[in-house]
Length: 123
Length: 123
DNA sequence: ACTTAAATTAGTAATCATTACTAAAAGATG
DNA sequence: CATCTTTTAGTAATGATTACTAATTTAAGT
Image 1 (tube, helix red, strand yellow):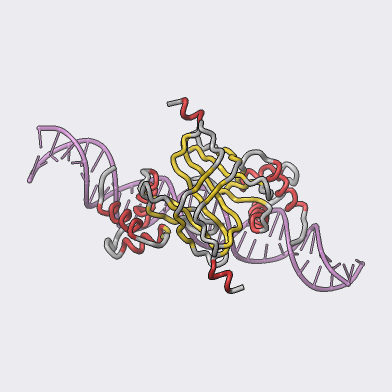
Image 2 (tube, each protein chain N blue to C red):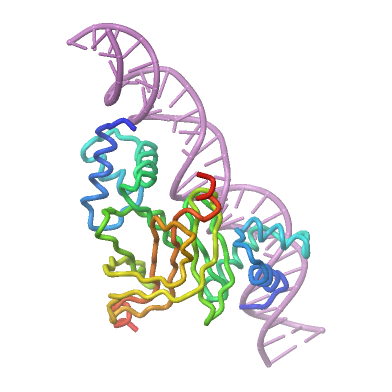
């Protein structure tokens, strides 16, 4: 895997963002630094970075895939408000009973769905 | 929401299947009973059934959305083998510390990623 | 049952996120 | 530097899903 300025920029944008950006938003951010970067390049590198474990992909119903920073030791998961669509980070341990030991666990993705505090107030 | 034979057939196909079928596979199954059922009808009803909480949608990297039966009390989650692509059902409790009480939790989706026993043997 | 209004369907066309392709440019290797 | 490999920009293609529409089916009230 060759190192290119496009690839490190894309990784940087994902790592430094506190939001959960989708491919197109990452593309927009990257254009501020490399104006003629190609959307295909963004997609291709995002896939590479996900496969190498550098970043994480988040899949949410009805929305474009989002990308999230990921560093061993600071695992986090997500709360998705089905009312306003906002995605909140949640830190803490996830304990799952009954994963048979014959399975080698590498990773997990957990999305909790519900209604956030702000949307509850509006009812 | 009107009751139609298409809608109940689609629900039936999802509920009675032990696999995790995607929209097209559900369409194929439905055609055995209603040969001229339309793919659009399958998609529209799957969305309705998901939104009503009758069935669940499973999102897996690089694969079409899958649909799964869902009944209160028999919650389950999934193990996805990144080698062979198989999706296994896992039953048991998921304990998540640190979901702030201000959030109203309705549902969750958990996918554990790793390598299944059969793929481990092949190494 | 009949009538009317509302919802749903089949079939097809359109959308849109993502991937594939290709010649040119940039990176790696020695 | 010289060569070989990888990556890129730009564009075209793909494919899952949704939108559209006239015809049919369902629901609700008499």
